[in-house]
Structures are given as structure tokens and as C-alpha cells.
Image 1: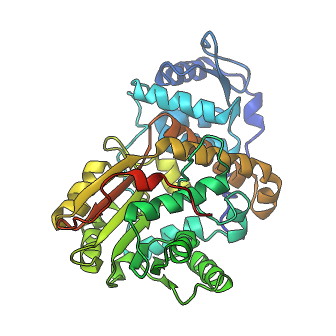
Image 2: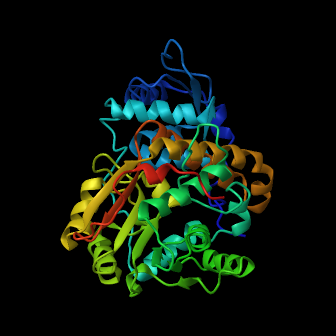
Length: 415
């Protein structure tokens, strides 16, 4: 069932028996220098270590020379593979380790190494997009059901209070999006990239709108259609298995939550044109919810190769210049919810760890380690500001009937 990481070769145990030599110690010193001020203890397979910081928060154990060399030559890719295969062990809190590395990078660590190499982010044609989405989202609904909330929402939640549960926060996020769009009964909504359908169903049920939701993940669309029938909403919500580029549906509101990361920078102008041809000429408005950056930087190469092929987190400037400005859309609101995403990921990681035995039975140990690293690294990235989570609300330039204040956004949440 689904993808696995079984392609990783098992570690040659004979390599552990070889004592580290002068060359290995030199490589270890380079790695220590590259980590900058990250408070991490580095240890080789025979116990050799390089001057540990006074108060290390964790220990990184490198299992063999090949792994050590790979971490130096291309850490952007090889660190993740080394951890997934067991060639790199982390003794300590994995989230804290990632946070320490991200802070070191922000302070100039790895400056001499190609940690963030400018490599091609992957294709975004119709065929490539289908492959990318299948690689991540079609690995099995049963897998995601183990650690997502009961509605299967796989995007940043919104926590009205720090003690809100994940289920409460995901309901709050969907309501928050609907309030930002100022949805009114009877309006038509187009959603691009609808996941397992929760937002579309929420909009139809609680705001009495009709929705056409588009997605190229076959597994997700099948699941969403089943949920619409179970809730008796199939007459107001249509889930379409098709690419966003083929959307030609008049609507009052256009919404995309968690899809922009998969569009590819080259296709931003195309997405802008799609929104322009769909939105009503006067009251038309929209919302883009996406992972982003404060400055230009590609997504980690390991994440692109193993987890999210083709993904790219844009800056706000790129979204404005390529998607909104060419069509004279007026930006009404910009909000950064990165700390909400860090908290969301904390919930996901906790649930994932509680389901590790079942995930291992579904896939294998390297798969478990890879997804543990992905979730922990993502939490750390949002917690440290390495990644951002933007919500941008926009409208036709002559729309002048939007709410006068923000007060309506913070009313009670529909469940």
C-alpha cells in the first residue's frame, strides 16, 4: 500500500567496526564548523567526537564515513536520507534539533556548504502535476486518517485559544476562511485544490453557498464525493477531478487553501488568469492560503525529492506580482499564521507517533523515519520563522461592500 523508502540499503555493519582515522576526524571538524552555533554534539561510529558545546541539546551519531561525506557534500539532500535509513541517529528531541539547525542557518551556519542549492524544483505540467500530487496525497486515506483530525483537514489550523483541540482549530480555520470571504447565502464558490473536501462541505452547510471544488488527487476526490453524499450535500457541492488550469466556472468567490505551493512559479500567471476569468466582475473576491518565505529560497531538496515533489514556497512579493497585480486585484488583508501551523504540526506529530506501529505495518521503518523527520522539521521551520503561512484576501478593484471592520471575523465558530 502506497510508497515506501525500501530502496535504502541496510547499513554495512562492518563499517562500524572500523575506527575513525585522521581523515574522518577532519571531516567531523568541518561538519562541526558548518553547524555554526547549533548546540549539537557530533559523534562518529566509534565514539569519536569533536569539541562538544558546553550544553548540547542532543547528540547526532554518524554511522559511517560515506554518510559523513554525504552530509558535507550535499546536506540539503543527504541528511534526510541518512536519518531515514538509520545511518544518522538523533539522540534527543528531533524538533529541537531542527530548530537549532534552522537558527544556525539564519545566523550564517552552513555558509560554506550547498545546504540550499538552487536546483530545479520539478515540473508543473499537467502530467508532472498529477505525478507530484499522487506521490504525496494518494498514498492511502487510511494513512492520513491515523493522524489528521476527523474531518481529514491537511492544512494549517487556526487556534482561537492555545488550549483548543485540533478538531476545534480546524473547524475554526474553515469558519475563519469563510468569514474572510464574506460568504453570503446563494453565492457560487470555486475551490482550487480541495483536499478531502472538508472546506467545501463546511461552506455549503454553514454558509448556504454552492461549491465546485477541483482536485487532481483521485483518492481525495473519491473520498470527498462519498462524504458529500453521506451529509446530503451533493446537490450543493460538486467535486471535480480536474486541474485548476481547466477551471472555467463563474463564481462570486475563489478560494485556494494549500494548493499554491504545488502550482510552480512558472504557472502563477496562469493561475491569475484563471481567477480573473472566473470571478464575478463586481463583487468577486478570493482568498489564497499558502506556505511561503520571507525571502527567495527553494524548498529543502530532500523534502522535494522524498515528500513533496515539485513544491515551492513563494514570497509575498512573488504572489502579488505574478498572480494579483496583473489583473488589478485589490489586496484587502494579509495575515501570517505561521505559529498556528507550528502548533498544528505539533498535534500531527504527536498523533503520528501514537500510530507508529500501524504506519510501520502499512509501509516500513524508513518510511516512518522519513515522515517523522518531515513533520518534526516542518514544525521547527514554522516555529523559527524559516517558513511562513500566509492568508491573502483580495477582490475586484471596485468592490466596496466588504465589512467595515474586522469585528465579524472573531465571532463564535460553527462546528
